[in-house]
Image (cartoon, rainbow, N blue to C red; front, side, top):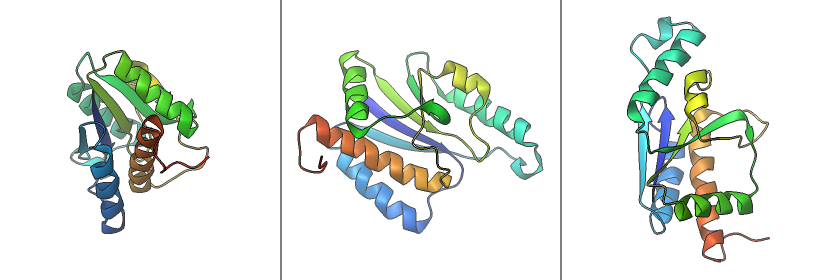
Length: 157
């Protein structure tokens, strides 16, 4: 199984980049991992929130293949503990999922069409985080889940 982290927006700020690169390297010891930063649509600043979300959604749906298992990070999604995230990832591997895609939406969230296509909706927290920080949190939590699956010392309970 290959893990994909997709994020709509700009490239990482330096303070985020170092942490994301570190956890990406760590995860790569367990699963192949690829980051894709989906650029904002042209004229994004001139679009309404709804039009921007729709255009971003169209771009995401174009990138997806029918076999991709899509996890949409959405505030209305289900929350995991670190252990249940580990179990979730293990189950996807056991189901022979080829591509496990975690999607971080744009500034105004994820379009309804993408949410309907999603296999799972995951809420990191009821708090609101900057999108770039979500990238770091996502990478750290997936790494933590991998370390739990291998019964390694990173996660302390």
